[in-house]
Length: 223
Image (tube, rainbow, N blue to C red; front, side):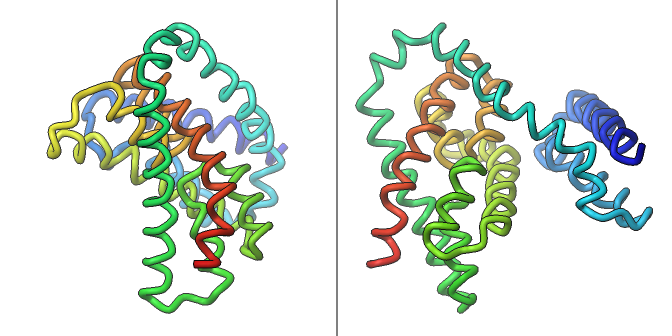
């Protein structure tokens, strides 16, 4: 019963946060971020554990697969655009993946974090299932890697559009590849708010970055 109640509460909170975001459209009010904060406060106030929450939340987790598959629609609709920009997209995603992993490694080394945390933060810019697998393979902590992935995604959705505006990046290729490579699924959802072409490019960048990260993470640690 608690699980069902929390599932309904999560949906209600997200809908409310979407309406709030649509009304004020302020970067810090991105629904994923505000919903997360409200749910954490709710669990803390009622002394509910993560395990109790996931008895209902697991049903939302099961929808991640269909949600990713649904991205095939904008991919198909803009397949000619993707073919046209294939090489720029490959190159931008490749270097974006290197920068994403390198920045995490540099940050962790700068603050002298424990080695296991270092290995967990490196795959922060790829989608959660891949990041958790990578963290496990390189002796990191998969659950901690998932937390870093969420942080990267939320921050990308919040501040990505501002950065694009300041740097005068207005093309679908630039916006889509940036959000997809840096902020995975959450970034792709943000790209969909901007346009279907941006979302299509972002979903490709998200997939490519996962492939590149899987290959490059072990090499980065060796260096």
